[in-house]
Image (cartoon, rainbow, N blue to C red; front, side, top):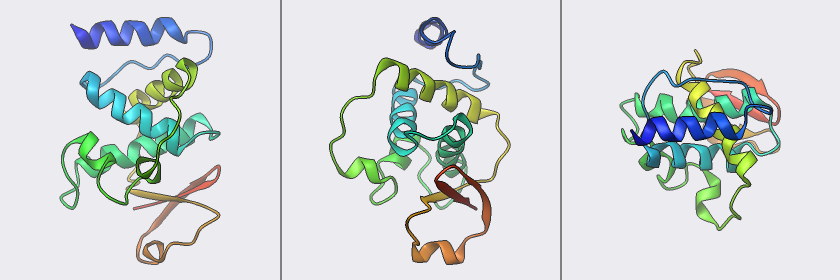
Length: 142
């Protein structure tokens, strides 16, 4: 019931600014909060597709044997998502709602992305990964 109420609230809050995306898999309220917070902080200023790809990295990690299964555990795993290491201001309702739509879109978006970084850095780990795509300021890998 909480999931239905939350989805209805998301649809009501942003009908005019975000595409309508219905969930293809259920997320708990806490999973949606973790995921949307991650998308807001990791992809601020990026396109909607960039936000979807950031969310997809977490979803793909949840299905990968090298990562924890829980979405929040993946996001807060040490040294994975840089925003978790410092205090950030709360996102606006509009930012959070757009991020939540991106999370739901990522559930059915076909992409194998597991890792990403900003184009302004060159992490050593990227040399061992397969480049999948570049979107906005991010480079995504498998």
